[in-house]
Length: 288
Image (cartoon, rainbow, N blue to C red; front, side, top):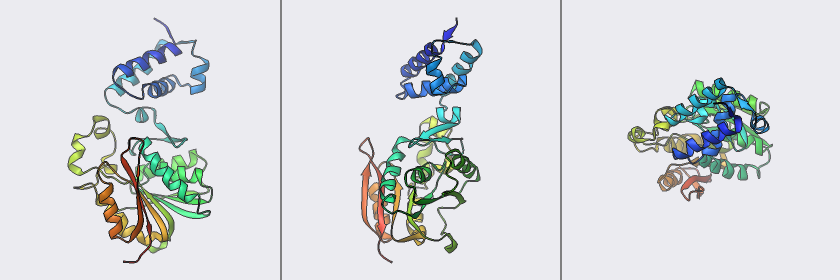
């Protein structure tokens, strides 16, 4: 039986809600838009028109894959972060609302600096660094990422958001000390792998089976990257510069102690919208 685009959307939304998906409204809209080749505006405009059986079948196949565990962002190949449209592939983590807390905290500080250099280390899709560049016109941003495949996504997102004049991608291993030729940054932001190795097998299937383990595995206790970045990358941070980390649940106090041991002061912890300590940042103020 033929169905209109609007009824197809409403049916998919109800199906997702019954499956317990909190973001059913958003995900239904994105799946229907992608499956029918329509923009959000076109979907609203054409809501009363009938979708062809072929298009309906395409949408329902996408929904079935999603209900089997595949994240919407990987199904449609894009996602939004801090108001920016981003290309997404299974080579990068899907940007999450929790990470917008890290971006917001860093952006507030970077805006006070005027012209400055910022490093987004463990950049993934480049979401944090691109948000910084979009919101702080005086910032020149380097997206530091180890994975070649992720760097390809960074390049696509730099072009997609017309930020080629102020954002550059660079291959960087966060576990190694940077070369002096890299120069100094006034701010480093980092959302590193922080899942303890043995915990990965117990993650939700939508994460464990689809997202890149390279971007998840933080070592035996989940803190390997915090130790390495605080110790080795402080050399790339200008005196008085700030280092911002996103942290996992229960890690904030440990990361604070790691940073303090590497000469960072005025260390602060910021909670996310769920009242979970999510961001730890400090100022490089001493030589050790």
